View 1 (cartoon, rainbow, N blue to C red):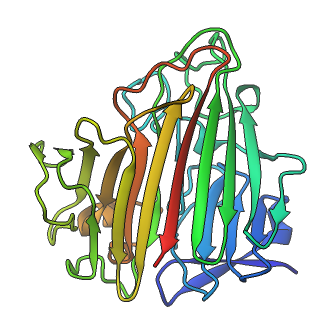
View 2 (view 1 turned 45 degrees about the vertical axis):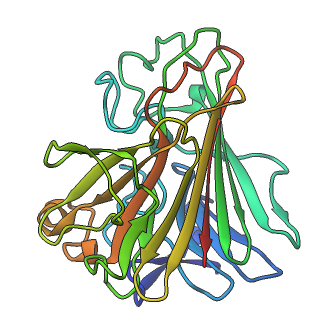
Length: 322
């Protein structure tokens, strides 16, 4: 019986029985290094990545809904064609995370350089979360997405390719809603949990309503309230390069890049933690688990060109344990 491990804190985990999930669980193991990754075909959703030393980088809620009736809390939800719900005609964060993907035939690999796999989703196979407007069943829009995961001893690369396979151009946003595991429950410890690299970015605080430009101090989780902030890059800054400290002896370098039809697009970032009050209100999130995670979410959120018919957009993040 094959097992796959997911992590809720740095000291607690659970195992998924891959034989009872209708072939929904995909495991990737890099034979040379021993690094591994677990994902579900539902949502093409990464649940876990462990380095070659066994260090887990990804957080999963212990109360996540795993039966396919809702989006999964934790891991790396894929947000497309929108982040949040600027278009009220279809659900928040779009439809990628709410539908079952298929493995691209022949895409699995395991070499000295790394191991990985690709999954795909065509709009005709989207059952949930299309809404009744822009992307509804009567829409003239069409899209195909391919998500590729590659791992090696210390890093994981996630690439989402979005291809307009229709004729009509469409607006879109894309974001990887990554939940990082904070070692030893230190998310509120500003010395051990922080994000560096947003200096000079324009900040939109979704909680306080404040808007300002960030100075030299790293981003930390407030001691008393939720953090939900969007960081937009200054002019001329295209790629996102961050250093994430996530608890004791747990530092991750994050890079993210994006393009539309080959032309680079500036990458924004979001930092989120629900804190105690919101955590207690969420049925799919442990009331104390806000201490064990920080979301650092790269995305193409503003000034994104329309995706014209027959063209592709690509978004990539690379996380490296250092």
